[in-house]
Image (cartoon, rainbow, N blue to C red; front, side, top):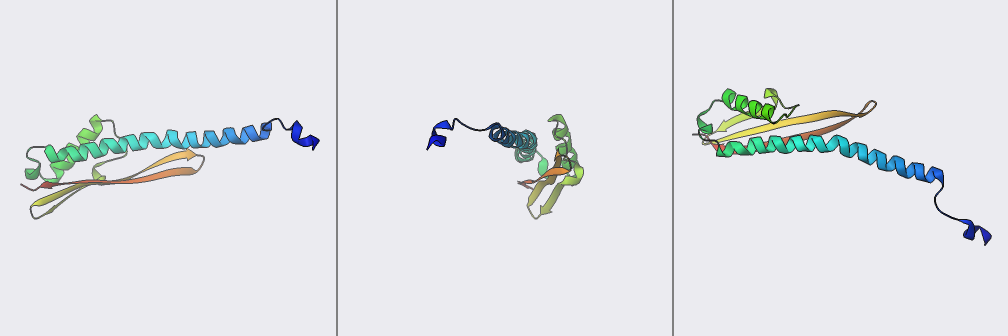
Amino acid sequence: MKSIHRQRGMTPIGWVMVFLLIAFFALIALKLVPIYLQSFSVGSVISDLKNEPGIGAMTSREITSTIVKRLDINMVRGVGANDIYVEKTGDIMTISADYEVRDNMLGNVDIVVSFNKSVEVPAR
């Protein structure tokens, strides 16, 4: 019964384990937050094409160039012309950015996040 009264809290090893757990989740958050912020910028650029006048009359190359320029202005890295797809089917044109971001987390452990943002616009 005496040992119950002597317990005063966590041991230093317990505190180190709690600190390491908090540091691990903070590291993951510090790596993922910028990736998702860039994803929101990509989604914004893609969805803004719906309001672009004359987008239906542009060629695939012109649309891709417009998107890449806007992403460059927004300082989005990791999305290039190879990740943007323009598909015309009848009266609808589908513009999408399908890409993945790979970021080094710790040592040889990477974080891989894939995104697919798309919008449909009239083709003329």
